Amino acid sequence: MSIFLIIVCLFSQIEKRQKELDQLKEKLTAVRTEIQQLEKQKVGTLARIEKIDEGIGLTIKYIDELTSQESQENARVEELTKEIVKLEAKMKFRKDDLRERLIRLYKWTPFYKMEILFSSKSVPEILSTSYYLQILARADQQAFFEFHADWERYLTDKKMREDLIAVLEERRKEKESELKTLNEERKKKKEILNKVSGEENQKKQLEKELKSAQRKLEELIVQLEKQREKERLERVNLEAHLGKLPWPCQGTVATKFGKIIHPKYNTTTKNNGIDISSKYGDNVYAVAPGKVAYADRFMGYGNLVLIDHLDGYYSLYGHLSEILINVGDEISVGRIIGRVGESGSLSGPILHFELRKNGKPVDPLVYLK
Image 1 (cartoon, rainbow, N blue to C red):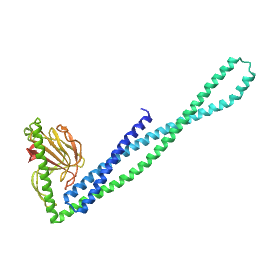
Image 2: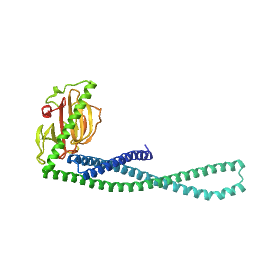
Image 3: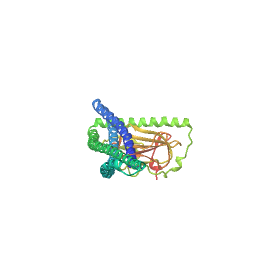
């Protein structure tokens, strides 16, 4: 593939990514506006944290997209630089060649006129010489046109490269600004949580909000179970996999199944699953084959994935930084469905994992290896 075609392909890819980047920026702006409105309305802590987490997630995604776009633009600058260097060498060669052609033509033309007047050659011989002179003139003309075309392309490439370098500088400044905003968003979330831990009324309110989020999740699972029963899908036997299921991610169990009292916020809730401390961005895997029933944000759980295992069991994966599957996807065991994150989490990067049997929570540790 020629450098020109490579540059064209890069332009096409970057234009497409730029549209996606613009759409992401619009969504991010809208979420930040919502955060400001929620602060004015003084809504519940969980709702504010949820929206801030959504902003944090979008900001991280936007920074990643900026970095990716920056990488592509740098590649395009490199390709343009290579093309410019080749054109410069090519034009130097053509320029030297044209200079020699013009000198030869200049020296030869007067003698050619004298030859027509005084030569003892026959008319056919003279005409033959004229024919070759015309060929030489056409070749000179073609060489000039090619030189001119290379020159135009050279100027265009240089302008494109200058524009790209300017865009890259703007991209760098924007990325710095977004990183600063990301730190501010994380600081804001921390301030809210610290305030909750120091005020008894806010602790009780947060506890109510957490329990409300759990009830809404249970309602969702009941609805999904009713829908699954109507579809009469083929079932597999997850009950036979007690103590054999693979872990959904690497890490250590921070919170076990059952009643828990949060050490910092002193809130009392029932943990319907387990919380696994892990590294931000680590892979999250499906523990058994099934079909994706839910893949979106959910109050109190951040980015949430629900997999229907078609035997009355559901597995739930919460607080993800990124969801990598869609509703309706058929999932095999070990399939990467997302990444560990802190969306909706009160305890930093963590995976909230649940298993539900006929809508009721069961202890995942009984089923995991």
